[in-house]
Image (cartoon, rainbow, N blue to C red; front, side, top):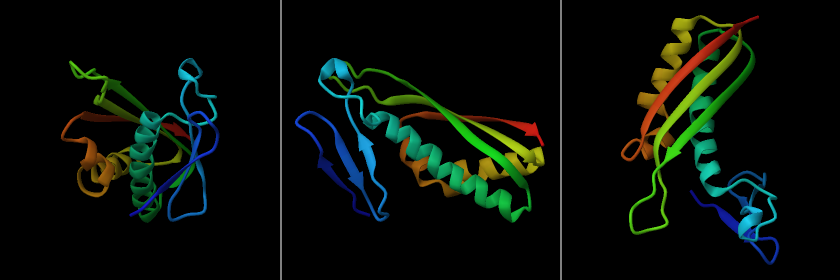
Length: 141
């Protein structure tokens, strides 16, 4: 896997690209000289985790013939500063899945568990350093 970042301005705005032609915008906050024109790198890490798991969950639910009318996942991460550095890695992450449709709760639980324990490489990447939990809610159609 290979990605490329290209600087857009004279500050911190970057575009990123990978195997697709889609661009991702990355920027820093205004308080350090950024222009707020993209996501922060640590936000992208959480988005990557949520995206990886979402693909798994949706694939499993589709195979189980579940009807998904609306889908979102809210990912929250807690960070702790490493003493003597400026590093603040994630130590706790929760993925909260919110689905609307005709979805069997047991099938959703299974899909999430399969993603967290068997399929999602991003989960495997974070697991050694962060406690990853999940929750869900189903909104009836």
